[in-house]
Length: 233
Image (cartoon, rainbow, N blue to C red; front, side):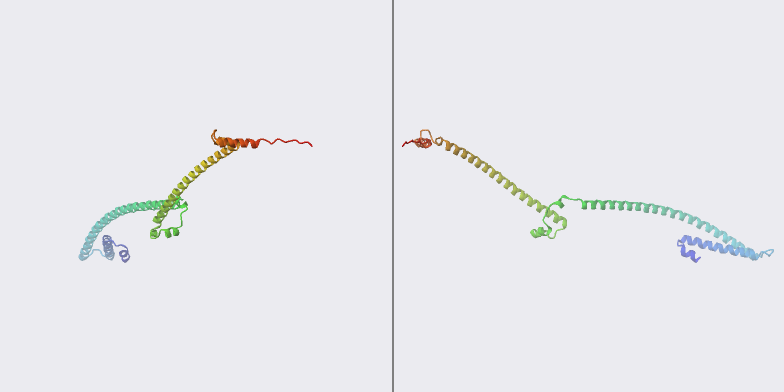
């Protein structure tokens, strides 16, 4: 009985076990009384009264035991229903937990894929973090994300300034090319004029210019070969 009491903790079941134990002891007493009076032809009046009381008590205990047994069965059914409901709730929560684990693994995979993704800004030839902080110490307390944004904005500003300078230099280059082309044309025209002047200088002067006419005459005289005089001895 001590083992049963240490195992069973429900009050209704413990009461049922107590009634069962009392019924068992009462039945044992009745059997012992019947065995002891087996050789007696007719039991005494006191024995009959004692047996009658014990039979009534046994019937009362049996009735009480049936009632407790019925209550135990109903309690067991209610416990089964409660257990089934709790089990369904546990199964639902376990399934929900498995879904959360699956979603967690999926999200971690996506996060790792995003971290390992070759972003274009990682390929930019940015200045080092130390050089940037040396130029802009106001960003020293920012986190890595805001610091990277500041470095990208700085790179954008520097490139826009360089692009502006490049366009200005290209414009200057185009102007110099046009100036060189114009001067080359002027030189080519001057060469043509020099060629014409070497052949006929008079085209540079008006036809009635006496100086030009005299110059032409002198040029023609200079071109006339001197005749050779033959002398005989």
